[in-house]
Length: 369
View 1 (cartoon, rainbow, N blue to C red):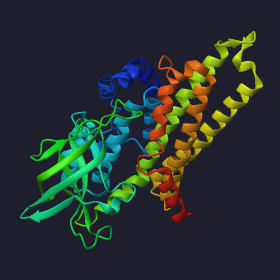
View 2 (cartoon, rainbow, N blue to C red):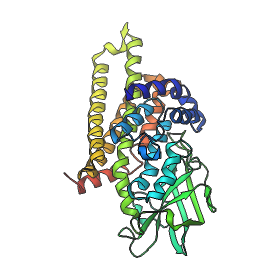
View 3 (tube, one colour):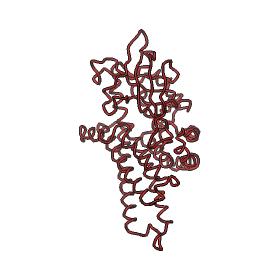
View 4 (tube, one colour):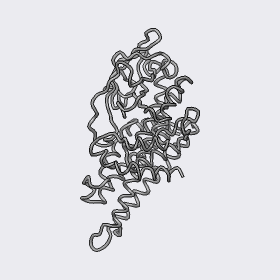
């Protein structure tokens, strides 16, 4: 029922704007309005804070179905979870009430600030500093590749509080608000895909944050960040599934209608084998992603492996499936008149963000079940 309702909403309210969102690289406001109107913008927020209280698997289904028609729009529920999950995992009761309720009610969005110009895969190499000053911390630094920056009201920011300890107790997490003095944003990045989701640098210039806005105890930020990614890599796997499903669905319809040599292209065995492989890879990715989501719900000990595996496999599969979809449409697939070239461009980022697939393989190797 959840899948059917989200799919109906996505096809009616989000899909009609997807091409324009991509072409003009504009924020998908129609999608945000539709998702908020149906309480699907942040389904992971617990009921006690006004949210839907959806489990990890339900959240995956929501993101998957939105991504099937518009990858940029699927980053609304996905990044709201990424940004707010540190608060859910490690924040005080007061912090949860202050920030999760506006998120659940659709009055705010949440982003996640981990990466920096010199700290991408090596997140522990961050340089952003947070220095204690009375009952506040003063933050200085630059965060890069921040999804929905400038649109989101709240930002989970990782910063160094003890340069000597670094990842072993020297990094702390804070909630920074868009309106805090000293917060500003760079120009939107000009990207290959997910053009409707703004990606900007976040500048922190002597930003004074009250100590009660620290997420968890001082020095626990890096552990919270890594624990967060164990859960949220699954949402990127879900996004990849949706993109791949959208491409497969479109290609299936196309080959039934397109005729060459006097018969539908889909009647040729070579084309049938391509579709069979696409569907097989997609279903394998889906089963792995759902298995990882179940582990996320249970907080299983092997979640780190399964989260990395799902993200890595699903995104690799999405890149292959969308590329094959373009091939099946031939010259038409290479034009912006058809959606599969957008899906191929959108799929690429799923192999890169929330940890490149090379990093996922490192994570898997260190956490073999």
